[in-house]
Image (tube, rainbow over all chains, first blue to last red; front, side, top):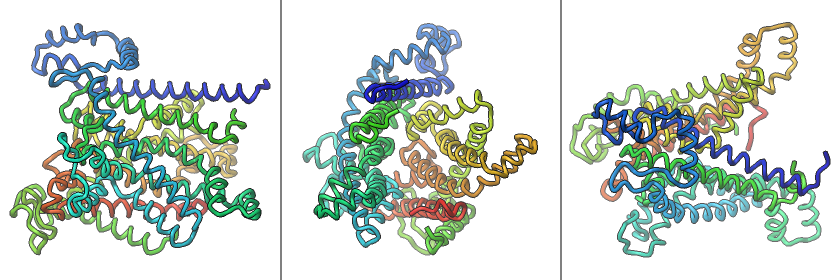
Length: 322
Length: 268
């Protein structure tokens, strides 16, 4: 059946949305099932492990845990979609949604500068490496990115803390509830540590993609026409080479996630990663499930958005959309 | 990547690491008992000094190496077993088995590894066993995907088509014509995967939800050392150094093996 480019484009958007929705359901299902299979449940947490079987049974009925699991899964998805993740087992039994609303912005404050830094430095390093391919600057950029990929976050963090916080005393050691300097200073080291790995990944990708683009005919033509070097590399080269890099930004989000757990722990930043680990150590199941669901959903949404951006950036994809 | 100095140095380092893991933890001192004063500097008695409780850092590092290697190898063994079965079924099983399996494999990539590990440890409890289970579950889909693409390529090669035309049973085909072609690439990829697993184990132990005290792990030693960064920076240096070197060595050794297993695949 013949179809216009715009309707094919619309269909591909719908297909991607459907995949995104399925991924969200899958994450919810795995989260629900893991909790289902694990020993102990909300009723046990309510009455305590030493309670009589009858009391436990009554608690189960009261919480609706005696219903079959498909029924409860549908309810779980419905509640989660409305942002209701239950309440923490401990303290003032704060709703999990409130805990996430409090800690997620904190994580974002570190993660956004980190990803911006990674994109800027990564694309810059990769461009330098591709332009000076095989020469000293290329080797140096490649060396830095190999180090960035292999050096674990929690090895980089103590090195930077030792140099910049303890030795030079330029930056604070870790996050403090009562701050003696503008918040900005507290965020520098965590953001740099978090950015290291994505920077390295993006640098390698940019180098590979750009050096391939620079060998194409239209670049040679532009050079022969006398286009100035800078314009040649950035406007002609990078504009065409940037697509795989944008895709990688999406998957970098996963790396960033791992980074956030470690960085927040190292610098005691009260973000969502810190909260999740704290909840595991206290066995605060609703908080664990809530944080996993929300970060997992964010991961899916970010990748979906990046996926959708591609045809907007690159007309070639827009045309060939099936 | 040529198999030059870096490749052989990495291999040598890995051999030393295995020796350290086997004999190190009780070679001179026990890794759990406080023996000397806290924070002794490196010397002839305690080669790398003692930690905040006066325990021998060398023995604890060696035990950490044992933990890392055990977790890395057992996770990889499980991932290989599951991944190979799923990957081979994905190519040779009837569609009603193959399709759902491959959909599941793809779906697993929608769940970020660290998040899945944290979920599993979160609901089943902390410790080495949950870490192994969690990391195995996150590791097998990559193996399955690799095996599937490799096996699908073999399916169209002449020797395979010929053998099948002669009426060889499916199991014979897989064991005789598919798996022998996969060992090289799987071994090479396993090195890099084990590096990832060791890094993940250290991360989880660093976060305090992996290997539990008093047993040492490189990750938990780094976590303990960060509180002494100002007064005794050496304490954190040793586990950081050993962990980084191990990750480097496994990656470079694996890369070298990859070009050996498949000369055409050798990249930059």
